[in-house]
Length: 294
Image (cartoon, rainbow, N blue to C red; front, side, top):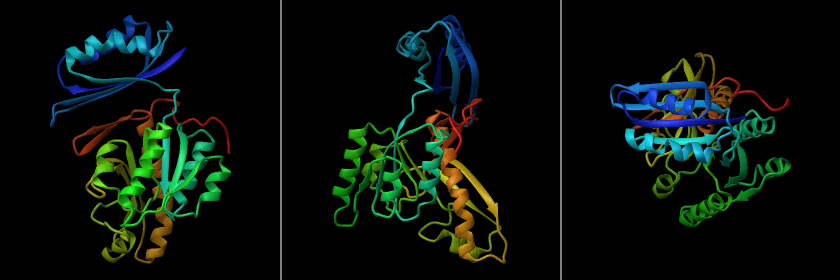
């Protein structure tokens, strides 16, 4: 029995939920999970539905038959097969905690993605990546060669059919052109809970401000540095007795967890960009289950 999902985004109006549920029922589908949100401030409506096609209708048939309903409501509607793993490129520099965490989650099936390549501007993690039987691409980036380097990155993306780029502590600023081309398809981890702590050393800034909470923010990448729509955040408590180095060490675990949760939400179609912010629906039952242990 095929398990599919439908994402709907449109202007809010009466009858949307009824139209979706009626269509799925008449098409022989059983809804197993549904979430919706009506944004009163913007007038936008968002919905995600997981369902099983009990009569075996293929995705293409469901999609084409739903088109008149989508047109009638002005919907941006997207059907997808929940069993298909999106193709992902991971980019990393010299901090490997997020990369290692993602590789482990991917290996045990806890992160349902197809990693097609790892790109880095350093050679530090070549052996780690190759040991996982994954392609490693070293692309050096300097001020002088940045356009050429980004062209190489996009060549990897296009050749592999990449659907999502993950910046796992990739310490290079992407150009406006690349950000626009991959809009909504690049996720970054910002090693600070508070966006006000920007730059290369936010933990030192946090220490100097005497914060009691540190954390991490995962967001979509836009041309505005660290200002993209936020997907996931988390924190951990710290005290005056800890150093900036302690903050860095404590922050690593939070960064890795926040990034993996953001990717999980994105690949399951639970994230909707809503202007400068996001709507993130809860995970469907069973979506965190791993295929195997350790």
